[in-house]
Amino acid sequence: ETAPEGRDISVWKNQLAPKIARGYWHLGENGTVLDMMYAIRADEAEHRDVNHVVSGLSPDQPNPLYNPEEKFDQVLKKYVENMLKRGKE
Image 1 (cartoon, rainbow, N blue to C red):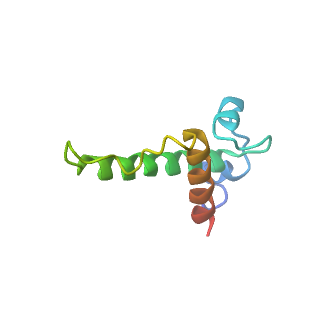
Image 2: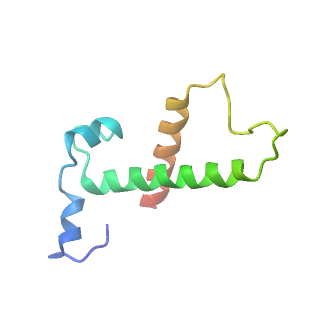
Image 3: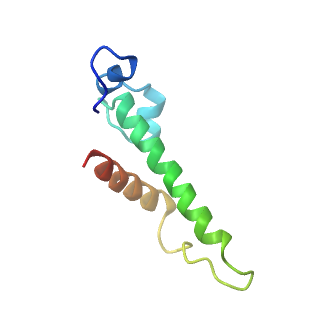
């Protein structure tokens, strides 16, 4: 977002993300490479957080992140939306 104009990275603000990425990350028709990078960072942050939580569980502890009542895709989409919102603040 704050990359100096004229730098290769500044193009990401306006460059359309690849179609496969716009679909996978739910970026919409006008999703940019910058939007895609935020989505990827949010996803990787989720992996980090999950790994830190579950790596500390003993074998007899239930996984606090497993919720069979809620669909995983809904949880992930909400998480990515929240991370995107936080990334732009």
